[in-house]
Image (cartoon, rainbow, N blue to C red; front, top):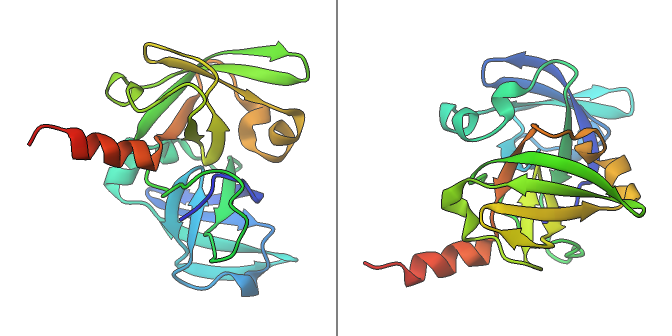
Length: 196
């Protein structure tokens, strides 16, 4: 489990099909083989770990299903990715419950300055739009965000300067695709209420 609070920016060092090497500022000794790390919101398993200066380079494998449903197939050497280590019992719950299981791809429609923050208009896939509610939580590229407004399949989120600086959001532009995970609770409520 994760909370959607980004703890580091990683950089893709190698991209070979569904196998990626990611440089991170985490100490190598702190990453166990088999550890779950959310990479742009996708829960991936560290398969190898090597020291890299004061940080680490770890490898992950993505299945064809993951490559189809996420932006991972667009990763190239030099791509920056949002990283979050898995939640430990007793950790601060700064965002919301995030599984790291991407539901689909959303797209940035527009980016506008609004005071000190930036307002992003996002378009969700029609089949996921019903899970997104005003003032509810949504996870985009691994980042826990509060939904401002919803109109059909479109919704808005605001990011403050700190969030823009410590995540990949500072470089997001209209047309960029995003890994979308809808609220975990909403997903299960919908499943329980669905006709059998």
